[in-house]
Length: 384
Image (cartoon, rainbow, N blue to C red; front, side):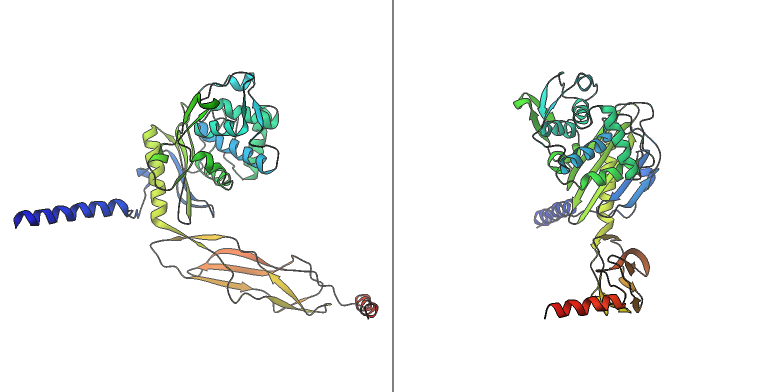
């Protein structure tokens, strides 16, 4: 009887261990001290909301995480028709001279754009990144100018790029926040995940094997990418992206002392996000006005439109009340212009404004005048 009880207790403990390994433990708090990286950011990517930050705007080197911007420009070129995955790219003397991680391109060697991108993402190949840059802009310097222009457009105010691959260079700086911003932008190009999800592949018809530098691909549930980087100046850095359900996150860590700390910090940030936030897609309320009356106009009313294509991030530990507030006048006076702002639709979380969208007119409404009335009457007579 004693042996049977012992077996039952042991089985129960094993079952409990299995269950706790499957069900994620909620991480209620994450201190800055528990993250070893000197700078870190966790961002929810559908909204851009910052969920956690530690020295987010501290200017630092970021090593090959720089290639996130390089890849962003590459995929934008693909979308714009300026680059095809089948294009042949020739390595220059300059591209072949890169040190650090590379695929040992020889001057004059050719590869498809697809393979060059694969090498840049998976193997973090500095030479492949430069070859792509030169193919698109003629020179690395011209491409770097485009990188800095795009950074300004994204309001990456902490960033100055000096090269396209992240090799240490004086003045080549960014911040954890800016890395999150450009990572989020790159993630809008879903084709990138075809490359960032590769663990092992080959180039040159199987002669060159490449292994992904992102070790979280093998260990983290929901990981989708994105880019690692390591140099003497930057330390060990990473932008790690992951998705579970409708929650998509990117965690950024800069300046870790070791690769182990880099992956541990990135995973801890992602764990915190998945445990503590949810994402709610916003939809138009049922009582949203469809039209509004127009005085002194050629028509008595005008239809209204409000484009709502956004989400909000909510705290899982609470049950927030989401309400809406519509603010529009009782009527309008002609003339009314198409896309003219008529009012606003505001979403409130626990009575605090969270998102606001413009309500606009769907068409022009001319003011009533003799000429307009005459034209209407004349056209009606013609059609009789």
